Length: 373
Picture (cartoon, helix red, strand yellow):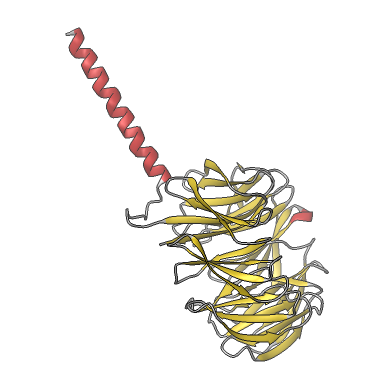
């Protein structure tokens, strides 16, 4: 009887261990994945000129790809199995083949590019070369430059409108927003905006662009149908990340110097609310339904979840040192945070609002792209 009891205990213990293993596997594996799919994160390391490739199933780094000096602006092509970025120091855009795991092309674009954007169909990439005052269009399949246009002084980036018809370029030194035809790169309009514009976000119907102004602590609202400035909205400090709610009803603006988040009512084109979040709210991202917004705090080394329907702050989640850029995987299961000073990537489970692991990457990681293929 005693021996049978021991066997039962051993069998029960094995069942418990097996069940725990299954639960851990489920916890690590995003719910939507099939066995034949890959889910990789690509982290641009500005300090050592590399991109770290992270397998988000095995939760580990699987490759380091040399791309060139000061990589930034990593983006996953929305259709093709490609990861794009720019080398600010090298003056070119680079293309990583996600399947092969190597740099497929380096395309010269001009001095000091900072970001890349795509047409909605993934066929074209657009890059603004800040030091050369140029807008460049690249065919994503042939990797050939198919168009160039002159811009104002110090164009910061190129942003494609959701309908794919226009490319918006903020010129930092001219304090203007230029609107180009996405197909021909013909200049359609030049609009004066608030001082030193940098970041842009656009309403889902492509009707209004919001441009952050670093020199005057303002957000400029621009009517893209009439090509006129609607208003300059005064903020409490210098804006950082711009997060547009998917339905276009609200714009969330991080303002590190005032320790908070300012909310723009896009229907009325006015700042409707302010929230105090922490010491230095920097980067941000949100779930597809905007139920949760995540804001990184570079001073407290945390990311704070916000239930936006109730404006309720959930407990902050510890990350590495100096968190900045953050993004979600396609399912919204995993939140990824790049920690610049500790040179790692924090992986957070959204369902439990808990840290899963910290994965070492290169030095000074500043941009993240995620690709499912």
